[in-house]
Image (cartoon, rainbow, N blue to C red; front, side, top):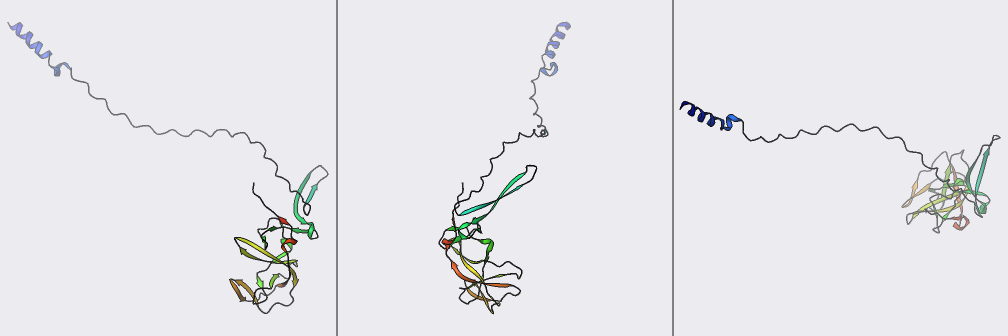
Length: 210
């Protein structure tokens, strides 16, 4: 009898999950944080050099405008050619500037002789019709004077023959919308304006952008 009761007690205890370890499996934990990014790799090797570019086109003389070419050489075979200035053979082999930012009064672009011209911004009369140029006493005498006026977004130039003015004018004027009296500069040489030079006397040029 005692043996039978002991067997029942043993079976009852072995069926208890708490004593046999038969519980359910718990959920897995959260994943860890991502690691920091690695360092950048070393730069790659330089690429191969590109092919040489094409030579710039050489200036070409026309029937009137000529490009002066100067060749420098040495006995050991060195040789180099430089180009410029541009010569206007229609005006006695006079140098002119094909790129000058100015437009003639007829609306055309011209090769103006800026190296021998003086920009005139003063006038000797109250109507601002007689331009005056001025230089330092040691300056080169100009061959031309020119004035500019803004027209339709362009600077249109009027060229005059230059002539010595003589004694400094007692009064000078400038254009600031209207003709305004100003103070006569000192320590300079004045040049007056002669006849107007027609735009057609200068060689016409054209520019294009490729």
